[in-house]
Amino acid sequence: MIKRHWIASYGLLPAEIDADRYPCVNGLLDDAMRRFSGKPAFHAAGEMLTYGDVDRLASALAAWLQQVAGVRKGDRVAVMLPNVLAFPIVFVAVSRIGAILVNVNPLYTARELEHQLNDAGARAIVVGNGSAATLADVIDRTRVETVITVGPDDIGGAAVRASGLCTFPLETVTLTTAITEGGRLSHEPVALDGSDLLLLQYTGGTTGLSKGAALSHRNLVANIEQFRAFTPNVQRPGEEVVVTAIPLYHIFAFMANFLSYFAIGAENWLIANPKQIDDFVDVLNLARPTIFFGVNTLYAGLASHPRLKEVDWSHLKLSAGGGSAIIDVVSARWKAVTGNFISEGYGLSETSPLVTFNPQFIDDFTGTAGLPVPSTDVMLLDDNGCEADTGEPGEICVKGPQVMRGYWEKPEANQQAFTADGYFRTGDIGVFDDRGFLRIVDRKKDMVIVSGFNVYPDEVEAVVTAFDGVAECACIGTLDARTGEAVKLFVTKAPGADVTEEALIAHCRASMAAYKVPKVVRFVDALPKSNVGKILRQALQNMD
Image (cartoon, rainbow, N blue to C red; front, side):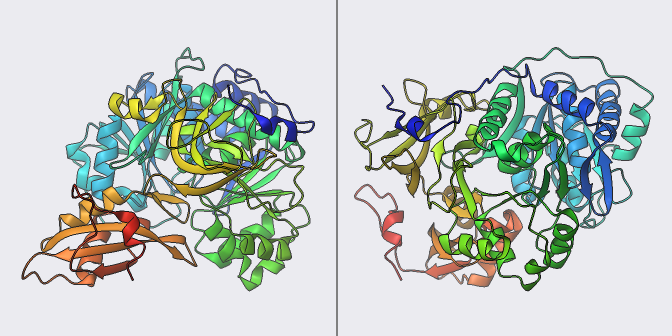
């Protein structure tokens, strides 16, 4: 029996939420668009959409997808966009016709994109002009039948330049054309309930190639309600202002920045490229946010920028952090400028994502991931499979209405991912204190977290091993002042091979997103191994 000793720390917060408050996410979206029709919903690149605009444009796109492209309930539609106005339009349209959204990182290489599209069985894709050339390279090896492109001249156009001229082996259509044609049609209502899938959110899971965490409408409704229960003071209908610099294709921003604040009529300012720091600060000046979400890297970069002091932070009530551990020094620097400490949470793609969070009554940085959110059981299992005592480490295992159904079409992986009594094994190691606050102390998996993004050594090693002249390799995470962690690669060369660090890095950049590319490469004579020949990644930590 789970102790749930954290409930005593809740104070006046509810211990349970109603995961069926809305029968599906569409109910939440429709309610918001009706209530806040005339209010600004999204700003990006100098343009603005009201809630009514989103409703109208999404209805037209939904009709086109259904009546012209033939997308049906349960079909997978990939979306490969940065934070631009097109993103919410596309999501609402996809959700309305009962299709399943597949979030795709626009920075993916051809190899990564091909795997994800084929694994999901995507029939259609909406792609920004900056990623179109990558898609063109692989589309004839996928099942994609419909391509909708988003350029700077389209409705909510992508604020990035095309990556080069490309030719598709099938006819494409621009988002503007699809919406214009769909405006003369109507979409047929689709019956949905909480058990229907809404999202395939790709993650490495435990190891290897990325897997699609199959998230239902009920999963997302539940997590929105859980987050809302822990942050009642920043849930004023029609009054909150959010600045979204975390990519919307990341589950953290998708649930928290987008859906949870769309539900209450917030004004959302989308940042397509937070690395353009001066433009970012200009947006912060205009927006004067009440809520800000970020990963440690983002907070660190902003806190050290001299122009951050120009921003009027008097309206800011919540600074939330996730994706990777928030460093206490970073929170202190952020607070020195904004008056706000960073409230940290913990979650995964498989949990929609929120598992724990520091509730709003906490008045300073705790250095923990907070308390389990309402209606959530968290059990820490020791190496013997027994529940760890308070203060003792154990693998974090989670059960709750926000936990995924399983990985998309991966029955064997699902058997390993859940305990016999239905708890999802996160692979992370945590410790509960006597108040129920959870501290993440290690990762059972060998995952590396770079700027909040998961990097799985198996994938990096598979790419490196394919390089001519590499005999063996292994990678680990190493501390990095800018990104939290970085990938460190150890390589042994084949006899007589001439392999250079520069050539290896170039090879990796051609096959993986930039955050996965090793930052440090070390050539060694041999890799440490167990008696059965397994490479000991832990031993690599002790090698200079």
